[in-house]
Length: 178
Image (tube, rainbow, N blue to C red; front, side, top):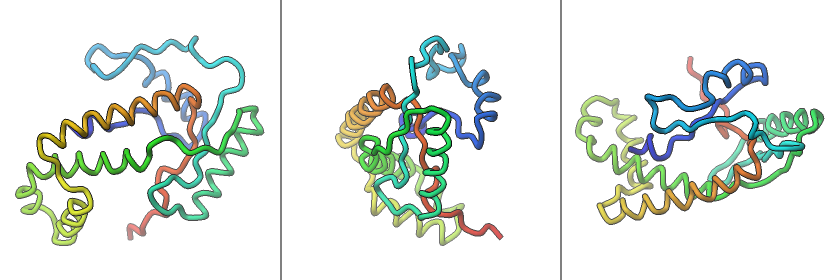
């Protein structure tokens, strides 16, 4: 349920050419996917496209080099004629908290199975996560649905003004996989 209610659908790309390649595949509805909507390319905003630039999202720390990379992309878009604006999208921290509560609630239903199959470090992470984001009871789950609607409504309004957002996917450098 959390993936269905909190998932954000859209491409992440390294280049504009990547977006040009993937967009015809992603755009529009599909008869077997009830969450897709029709797409009409004629609905493109008139004039300069407004871009929301988020160099350091609230809710955590962003490494300086990551913020610098976001600013670099913003400069490229500005030079290309986009209307680039440093802004803070709405309700990010609320969305993070809400998503955490959904995950705790859902994973709480299979906690015994999770504990049986994960390493001790992963289980300690799970316990710390669920302490930070307590699982909901039924009444709280109804509240979460209402709050999700509030957050989604705020984001719909934001995206109507800023159809393109440039920001970090991860706010800290990736850990070493070796």
